[in-house]
Amino acid sequence: MAVNRRAMLEQTRLACASMLPVCSLPLAARGAVAVDTSYPRTLTVPLTDCGGSYCAVFRVDGTPFRAVIDTGSPFLSVAGSCTKLWGCYTGEGEPAGLAETWETYDGKEGPVAWRRGAVAFGAHELSRSVVFGVLSDELVGRPGGVFLGLVKREAAGIRPTFLSQTPFEAFTVDLRAEPKLVLSTAPLVPVDARWLPMVDLRPFGSPVEHYATRVSAMRVNGRAIRPPDGKPVFAIFDTGTTGMAMSGALWDASLDACLAAAGARWPGVVDVDLGMPRSPPVTMSVDRPFPTTPIRKIPWKLFDGHLIVLGLSFLQDRALTVDVDKKRMWLGYDA
Image (cartoon, rainbow, N blue to C red; front, side, top):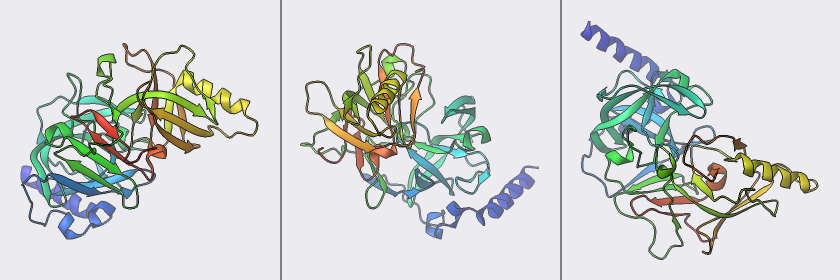
């Protein structure tokens, strides 16, 4: 039965390969290339537009998969079935010895099985034993998807993150002329750059160390937006989000600002000043980030502040560099 099952899986893989864009890559990208097992100091991964997000192609045990580059989540994942967009899973990897978990992506919930396999980008094999998640159909169906998470550090009890299983300590998501992801085993932020300090939200209940920083000011259509309770505001960079999201109190204040400005379109021009108070801010400005949604409930019990999630609307045509181990972020320019 085991032999027949392997034969059946191989037939399924070959049948799916004929209809998968991810499987129509050049042969050298599909696993017929000599694998370089030496670790590169810097690894550059091309990114492509995959329907409003940016995706990378990688291989697990030689089989190609596609996933959204996501600075807001921690895990490497594959779709648990055969799909045109994400790849054709046929049982790659071995059991990771970890119990199945229930995860939430883009507001959708479903089970995730955990396996372990050889992961490679192009000719570079990162490891023969990377833990990755196999997503159920409930999570993959729109508006869900498959994600390559770049959050490196997790709270206790969380499954292993992708980056924590590699020597990489820094990365750049460059969404300028030729979109690419750069992974590095050494810091990437220039010594003289005007960088932003990371704020670890795990002590407040976050399950991972998001790439977050303080917000010193926010404006909508030129009008200052301040939380009515005066509590601090934090921004999270999230390439898995297309527009922006904000705490309910900030949403309400922003909507009021649009209503007060005659002819202003929602949400209008949004300016976010990033950085610690009394420090020169780095300002990000976007005209009508879409979609803009409220966060009515933040599930972190100890969190006593407000959140803004900055998605691709704020990062398009820019480069976000994160020195994870140095806890600093740089936007690749001085605003």
